[in-house]
Image (tube, rainbow, N blue to C red; front, side, top):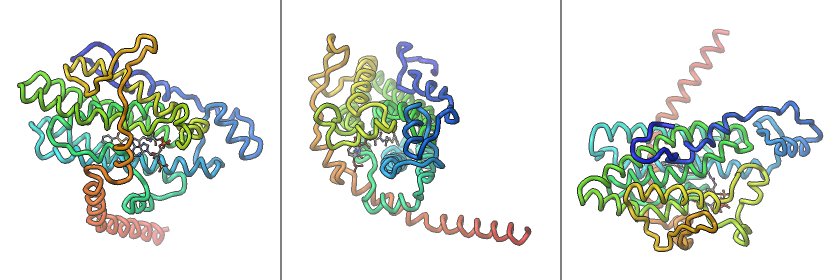
Length: 350
Ligand code: BYC
């Protein structure tokens, strides 16, 4: 954990709470798993909590689920650069600008790790990007909200990255090896992102009245969308119609969306108190019996509206992405031409 200069020694995000180290300590015992037929070996590897690797046989639906989730995750990383990139030119100091540029570049890197992990399943980055641009693959609902003030950059770090880490730490133990390994690196970097967001808000909340109001306004606007990031309710009756049951049986998801949302609320409410910011939910109350914070009803109509393409910034985000892709065509062509020239040279030298 980094030094903690603004609150108690409590971890500030899930990556600091030991889950990543636990995943890194995973021991490969694949050789000790007896092989029967293909399906039996796949089941035995899962039962022994071993990783499935690209060369292994896997059921078609397992592969499809992973491509769907990893592609969606990769797209979220690169679309997620847009709302915060909006503030690079207007960051309040050179130090803040340098940090924000580094953070945005990290997100591009996360996209790359994830597209590479998905490619091990037989798809390609080009194919996934085409599906994103055609609206056939999704990205996280959260990035369809605007960043209106500098405090939004703080709220994205604190709440959005905080929620993302809560979801991603268990993915470091995902049954698919390349995804799990990519997530370990992503979580370490995200942890730093979350801290920089908390620190921005910490300073604003202790600044002038106007700065404190700006921090409060950002917390008001990002709180509920951050809770939606975990996905629709998926416990009890609500589990029907979601992917959770199967994904958990396959060791892709380790917790339900609802469990992770609750863990996030439990970790974040005391942090809001430290910051001196209110969270916009009159129903927030500690429940002694459950040992958790109760929270109010999430507006699932708003969530589905955003997921279906009708959020405040959906059209703008996709349009920007498509334009960036077409304006970058010459770079891809030049890289391909260079690679072809290199391999021709290598061939004629052989
Ligand atoms: N937004 O059965 P469910 C970041 C969809 S980037 C949109 O629970 P699943 C960062 C879901 O796809 C962090 N759609 O699905 C980057 C499904 O529809 P389809 C992004 C959502 O897959 C830059 C349907 O709802 N993190 O941190 O089992 C700057 C039913 O859901 C959402 C990831 O991508 C949503 N929020 O579970 C700053 C994490 N939620 O596909 C920060 C990896 C649900 O059947 N992904 N849907 O058409 C996951 O862990 C899982 O995919 C989810 C959903 C928990 C998100």
